[in-house]
Image 1 (tube, helix red, strand yellow):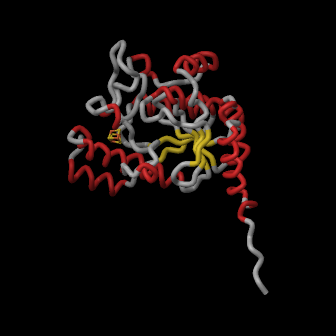
Image 2: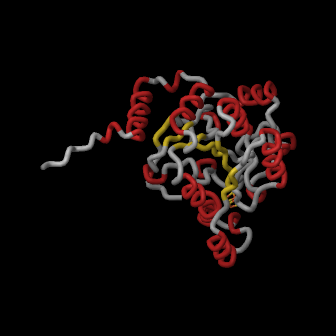
Image 3: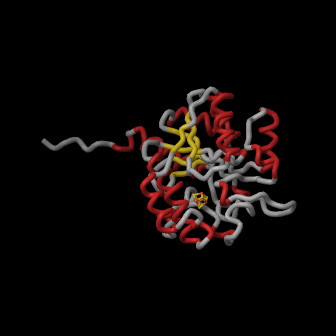
Length: 258
Ligand code: SF4
């Protein structure tokens, strides 16, 4: 007897992806507020959904606050690169206390980092773009990819105005790894973000008051001067077109690698 052909469109994940494709075509997601997008995401994916938060941008903390209000057990993770500022570690602990929340710290593979440092030195990232990307790959991109393999979706604080490489981000996307990527703040301005921080007294990185609009790894972030582009302090020795760590670049789609 011939086996019945399984209708995979009825599988929960495929149904969700179909809903996303329809939402993208109809523009439904674009019309939704960040809270509405997060409520929809949590309803469809929690607990296989997590917020990716660097604890170095106010956007991530705004989303953490919103998600916590919607679902107190919503998940958040940070890439523990081993090179973060002390202020960032302090903020992670403040968030744990303020929200009574577990922050999932994702560490790189120790043997890979050890081998990289032995071959290229502690500060290889200043020597060439290739070595900077190698460090980002081992400390960020690969641990992030391994963590995401356990999830259905992830939430990011991307805004279209942040960088020339982010202008086409949508509120809900299917990324190159088959995951749902949720970017609720894509159409927010920096003012919108800071207004929310003040109104809800969201804890943020104290280095923002010392000229750091964005706080990444300590050796790769500096304070900026008045009038400089907000991302000028990240990998400041590089061309603006290359300023991504690989986390938000769809390497498979553009073929650029990391
Ligand atoms: Fe390495 Fe700098 Fe990338 Fe951090 S930001 S992973 S220190 S190259």
